Amino acid sequence: MRADGGDGGCVVIAGPTASGKTALALAAARRFGGEIVNADSMQIYSGMAVLTDAPDEAARAGVPHHLFGVLDPAGPCSAGAWRDMALAAIAGIRARGRTPIVVGGTGLYIRVLMRGIAGVPAVPAGMRAALRARGAAMTAEALHAELARCDPAAADRIDAGDRQRVLRALEVLEATGRSLLEWQRAAPPEDTGGLRFFTVLLMPPRERVYAAIDARFETMVERGALDEVAALARRGLDPELPAMKALGVPALCRHLAGEIGRDAAVRAAQQASRRYAKRQMTWFRHQFVADMVVGSQFSECHQTEIFAKISNFLLTRPG
Image 1 (tube, rainbow, N blue to C red):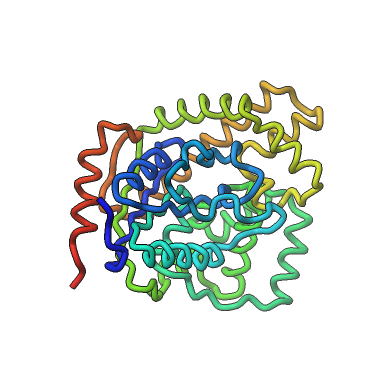
Image 2: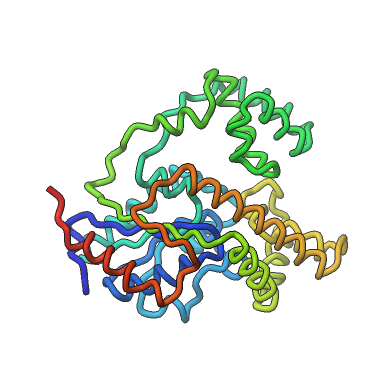
């Protein structure tokens, strides 16, 4: 079945890491004549395909993929910048009469695609500089503790090691007197070029996700994750860059520097990945309303039900 891209139908596949999103996206793309758009904030970087478990060339065969490995790890990518690229990719897919299939576990990316960017007022440059100078003198844990005192709801949704997001939440609160979460929830609808969305959320039991994460990271190391981290380390990139905080990178960097053994690095990366998956599941449970929720990892036994609902969505014309 090939959809008519002119009706604005866009399929979104979301869920925590190791839930089977990639397999579902590929199956759906082949079934519905689709092209896949990445919504993973780490898979967008080049040179990190193994580390981020991006689909390889064999998996991509016959299915066009967009926004995978397109940015240099030396620069950050904001949600707004990703949204602009995603909308451009989706427009091209629709122009070719094909079905856009957006897939990823970065909830913020998916939210801004569907709902628009929060209209947060600009933070005065002097205030931002002062806060960031103060933050530079604090440990990540102390900085996160300060946010937890001032804005516990925001702190609960931001990892203690993500200094950039913690600082952003603090500066918005200081500049506006309102939580960043309040601004995000109040984001006005933006023009998405007439897109309609059908969302599928994969939410396997936590223990299944954790087991898959542990097994997958062992495989990643065998497939060349250490080589990718070594290449990043040789570039001397700022450790605060998002790419340098990708799951597994800090632990494997420590191993390459001789600080910890290989097994300890793998265990640390697995633990960080499990914690990230837990945060993802919490976010999707409380911040994302899907058209269809699958309470297990994707497998072929789910295809009939999922594809029937996607087909019905694509064949239903708006209006």
